[in-house]
Length: 306
Image (cartoon, rainbow, N blue to C red):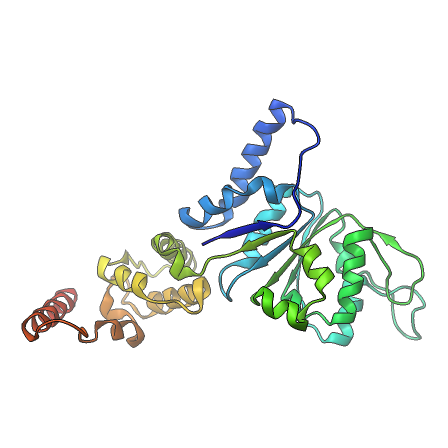
């Protein structure tokens, strides 16, 4: 289930003009167009207003659930004049992350050229901090200052730089782990005024068919192998799978199927990797006769697909 929580109640101080409401509705609908699947879009659209009026959002969810895509959708929802800038906090060495975020001032050190950081690049836009819980704790206090004061100090500078930026953090860690030392409590509570918890793929099974079609269309435009689509039995097996790697794993699976299916053919269940055929194990319950009938049906169905 997609969960949004608000730690601090937000109240509109004045009523919007009717024409503004129409424009906001249009932008709300357009914001989620980049996402695939009616199920996930319907969840998100219910809480559009909550996100619209937030300066910070924390996106949580398992790896591969599409946190950056949701962050990009929020950037569209906010209709920011500046750019959407994404940074993976775990991919940058801890001793370099501060200068990457805040930039380096002129004369900061001998032989070091001044440069702007990600906050400067995201001015009037949105900064997406993926794996925010991997940010060193001392640096988290400086991030908190940016959120509260809307200013930061470049490395080697004593002059604060004002910044207008929306900040989105993302993590696959649970709140319990975050508050056990991964994140400063004050930063967590400030970031979690609006929390978006994305569902795993197994919890949005109704979106799998749309996602499969989307990925196959992408592959067809790129490679042009004339793959017709998925058979119903193949799609059913994909829906029954647990998908520990979520949407990203589904994307990789569709690529494997697209490449390994003969050109101009329909992807059938026989083309699926062995992992998916383990779902055909002998039933744990039932009479011997019913188990045999069940296995016979599966064998016949598989042979008909060949």
